[in-house]
Image (cartoon, rainbow, N blue to C red; front, side, top):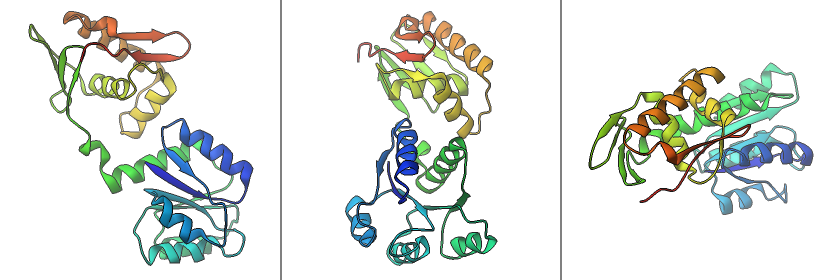
Length: 227
């Protein structure tokens, strides 16, 4: 999904962009703060992060302009400690408000919660997938081959889905924990290890355990297998 960050502090923008790219979002900034609407229309983002204090016109102005044509989710950022700013943001139709300085984990969690609520992307994802000669029914949490089937727990199925969405690429332990947490499945580092080991053991039963690799100190990787 595309996220437009309307922030004139280049250092903060670059840090936000770096963090969001780690979560596979497309991130765009504004080159000309007098032509925000033109750039917004060109990008057509799924979510906007906007600072209140900007050159030319403030974030409230651009929020009004955007809301006149779109209901795209908007998160306000502000370094000002004025309750009226939050009230104004909500009145203008913002979806959330974050005061600087903020923790990036909080920003990521808010972005994911808003996108999940607005676009319902978890429910829209394909529920049937083929991998390594097996058929995976994520709705039923079942993995089947011609010879046998196994049933996964919801956490195991969620982890497998995350790994398969980035086949042949390492998914870090931190990313898995964040995604499980954001999906309201509260999980610790030790619990993640238990779930992954249990997932691999179940996959071993149908000859697929070798396709999940542990990358020590990094995370986990699902190999391509035979489609």
